[in-house]
Amino acid sequence: MQERVKQLSVVVPVYNEEENIPLLHERLSRVLQGMDMSYEVIYVDDGSRDGTFTQLQMLALQDATVQVIQFRRNFGQTAALAAGVDHSKGEILIFMDGDLQNDPIDIPRLLAKLDEGYDVVSGWRKNRQDAKLSRKLPSLLANNLISKVTGVYLHDYGCTLKAYRWEIFRHLRLYGEMHRFLPAYAALSGATVAELEVTHHPRRFGVSKYGISRTLRVVVDLMTLKFLGSYGTKPMHALGIPGIFMLLLGAWLLLRQLFSRRSPAKSSSSFLTAVGFGLQFIMMGTLAEILIRTYYESQGKRIYVVKKIISQSQSSLSPRNGAQQTPSAII
Figure 1 (cartoon, rainbow, N blue to C red):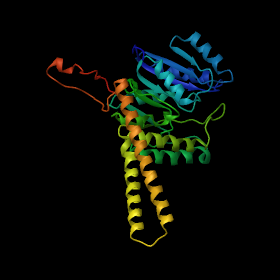
Figure 2 (figure 1 turned 135 degrees about the vertical axis):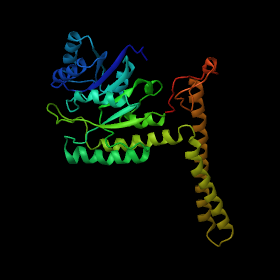
Figure 3 (figure 1 turned 90 degrees about the vertical axis):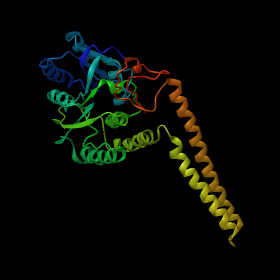
């Protein structure tokens, strides 16, 4: 992570958006220049195949606040946002799409909400300007599912326009396509999350990069998030309990065989199957516990998050045994 020398970093992942880039940067610059704070704009070209990178190169030559990161190929939005965070220098990060559907005019409102004491402010496209069946309906179902599973209730997880305090990214790493769950990830490590209605415009140029198949990927990623959030530090609770249940089932089947006249072959088969599954669950849980301990101990990570330490003795604030004073995420 780089030193924080800017107040604000705006991270914009783009993929085949050559027609949108000039107008987007014009609108973005107009808003940012009207704010009394230092800033930078980081465009991440996620392997575009049109003239997007050429447009971004021109911006970087004309505007000293612009930084352009080009990927060798298309790695996806999560990777693009992660690269933006890694190369950012701002104390506050704003994420937004590069297709002109998010409006930069909402940035000051996001920052004002953040100043109320929140760590994350998530945009809500209440009047979303997208196709109802292919975009809005799957999004509605996904948002309801994510909210119920994670316990972090937001109307619009899919809205890229969000504001974050940089601190939450100190030890948080993004993989796969987990960018849509960022507010939930942050909440798992103790961050406070708010939601704010934002403007949403119809797409003028280019085509959407997402389809209805995205909903299936959301479900798969949500399973990972739920496991990490609920059992990330105690995987045996997730795997050991089903294992014990299967062993008890096997014992019941064995007793039933001993005191009944059922076919020994069928009963023995059921007994061995239940015991076999039970032992597999317990063995997997044990291996997962060993891996979790190796993960935390090898990197000096903690299984808790400290928000603040207050003490009259300054020396008592010194960490012991390599403990970090800065917040650390358990995901």
